[in-house]
Length: 255
Image (cartoon, rainbow, N blue to C red; front, top):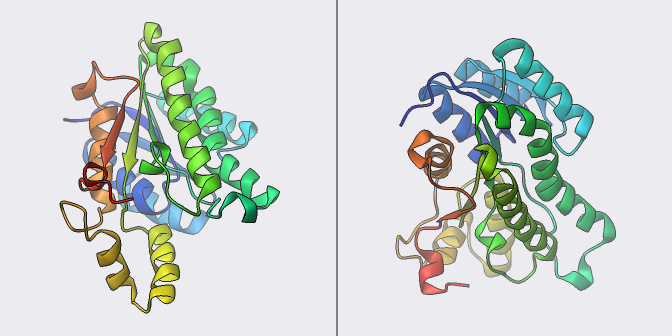
């Protein structure tokens, strides 16, 4: 499973799953353009992977148009788009402000929609692929995360719609739906709940995954491998699908 000769744009590449994906894609032979809002971590990942970095807001069409133009100048066309951006909206509906709702939609859904729309002409030309990082929260619900859950459900619907519309042009579109993965964003959530339950972070992760069949959270590298599979020619007959990577959590209905 190699990505030699492929050019990938990775949105949200400065940390967590996005950074792990950048490292793996580079190791598999892909040329990468890394997109994110914060220059310092993005440049660090780019330097370590011999990739290009562009500080940009993927929810803004003008920024994504510049990113595609950069790829076109240096590498010809985008073969793979990975959108790892996400977060926000973690409150019940009654406590969720309009600003928090809008931010959740922008961070999760608009980054996916706008990056896909910007790359679509290239992807049609290259018969390329898109992988959205959704979430298990894009398939089911947990308490206290209305904006995040609604936005990730919408990302899954967007994925299916693009797959249906552009499959005849040879474009494949899929989503990875991780369960609990040990990232900075998840650490912050665990720290919050750990304080409420008299635990430390490690103890909270253990409690949260205690009924997972694998009895642990995932690691970013493990999700990156799922992304690489869907992006690669090994998944050439797979489109419109959600690949759940959750340590078996959803099998035993832990929520």
